[in-house]
Length: 184
Ligand code: FNR
Image 1 (cartoon, rainbow, N blue to C red):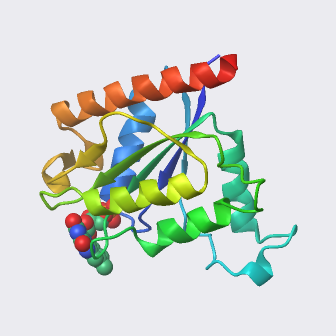
Image 2: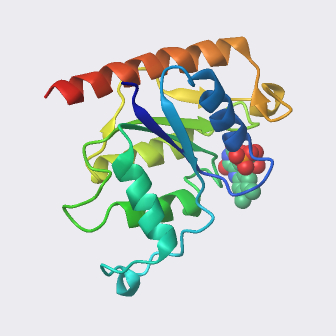
Image 3: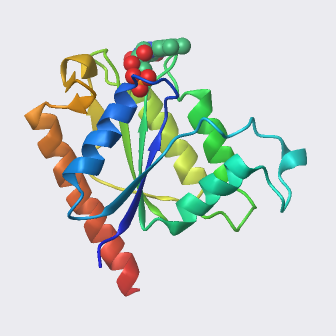
């Protein structure tokens, strides 16, 4: 059977490059994975008072989607040299309940993109640090940083061959990691 992959989109805007990258992955991996894209529009601001067993639907959906995934890819932009609040906020919700997070132990491929040459690499470093705190299996090896993203995306799809090949190789490593976890 093919793995369930959840693609988390770190940008809320309609014409997001992050979303374009995820839509491209969903298409290119359709024979290798069940690929579902999770947007973060419905995730409220984290409030520990609201973090009860009856969490808001947006949080419940996010946690369930993560729980159902064999592997996760997070595609994030960089805002002001850092991880967008939307992504950090969603990860804070997903990190709970303490010691029962559906994220813990999941293999995660982290990806950043930016129109800038630097590709959002500072946001990616912050993302990986947060994932480390949650006990996620951050995929080791080459990190996917997509610079000058606006030149590599046409009509809502990533079209740059070198980037597509690089992502493909990263997903092969993710699939190996998922298979290893399944054998444990
Ligand atoms: C940005 N952008 C940006 N880019 C970057 O490489 N480093 C940065 O520090 C910032 N800072 C920043 C702050 C804010 C508030 C915004 C709105 C944007 C530009 C950003 O990379 C660009 O808008 C991307 O296209 C956003 O990603 P999506 O929405 O296309 O996925």
